[in-house]
Picture 1 (cartoon, helix red, strand yellow):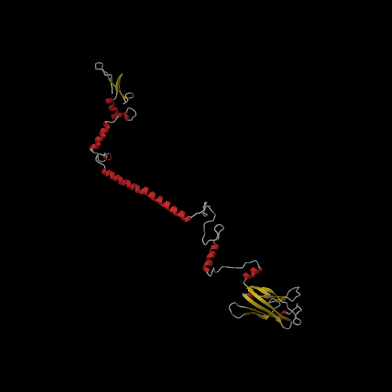
Picture 2 (tube, one colour):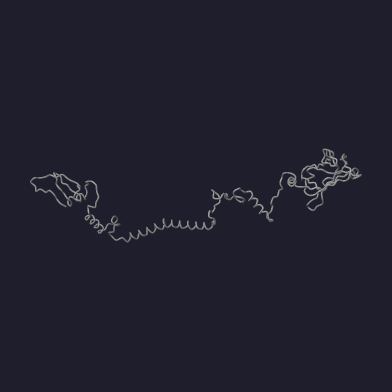
Length: 312
């Protein structure tokens, strides 16, 4: 049976059984171990010849290769110490312990294992299975490592951070309640709508004022002398006559005013509206002939011809 050896680690392994050389059956339980010669070789993986690792007599105690009978053993088994330097290799090996005068040769096959492999088989460690390449591509393996390093419970594997996968939540992935969500289609629709809105806004705020200005200038240039817009800047005879005519033929009954203000309207009422002399007062009425507009004191002369009323 092959004995597993942990690489680069000092160990004590079980060797034997040691049997009497005479009958090849009787266990040797009290060997003089310093008379036992230990030979250990190690195979190499580079095509070179095996390495002779140990070629020396066993030691009884405090040596590199102490050979000690196992307490209470009756089958001829012993423990053998190996140093870290002697086990610092990987691959197969052979061990032979011999004392021609006392016991039959003891042979063992050895297997030198990397520490991780040994601990995974006989301890609590796990085999290291790094993906150095994927389909012969080391870059692909690096990319896979990056994706695993950025793993998130909500994002999954990602070479770079992605939005949280919490559907329809803040910062999460968008969803389609009705199904059939096509982002490209909706992006195009948004582009068309936004472009149309921008163009409409430009037309409203730029094109329309330009048209208005042009129309205004044309109308102003084409206006005939005496037109209303020219009355202030360059009043014409026709314009002034139009104003005078409108003023002189104005229906005073359509004019709204409050109080007995002294103005052209109230002055003209005395010439055209109902006027009545009543006990030292001359009363001037509004255009309806009923409401008093204003009045003034009068001095009466008994020798004068009395005038009591003027009708409108």
